[in-house]
Length: 108
Image (cartoon, rainbow, N blue to C red; front, side, top):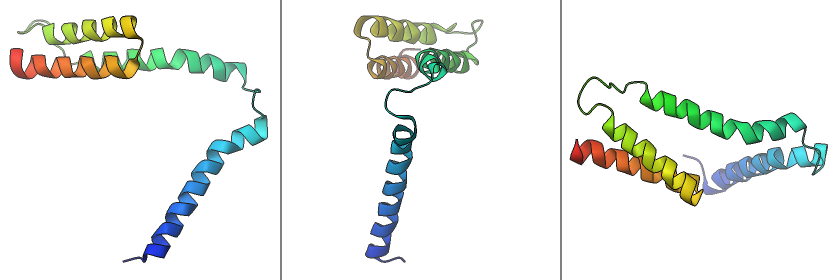
C-alpha cells in the first residue's frame, strides 16, 4: 500500500499534466488563432454525433413486432420537442431516456 504523501504526489502530477495539456494550445497558438476547420467541426460534429447515436440506438428496433417501435418513437418525439422548446441538451436527453425506460418497463 502506498503512503498518503505518495498518493497526493501522484494526484498533483496528474493534475499538473492535465492542466498543462489543456493550457498548452493557448500558449502555442494564442487565444484567437483557432483554424477555420476546427471551428467548422465544432459546429457540425455535435449534430453528426447525435445522428449516429440515434441510428445506433434504433438499429435493433423491430417495426413488425409489438409494440411496433412506439416507445422509441414517443421518446424521440419528446426529446426533439424538449430540445426545440428549451435548447438544453442534457435535459432533452435525460427526459427522453427516462420516458423510454418508463414506457418499456411499465407501459409496454
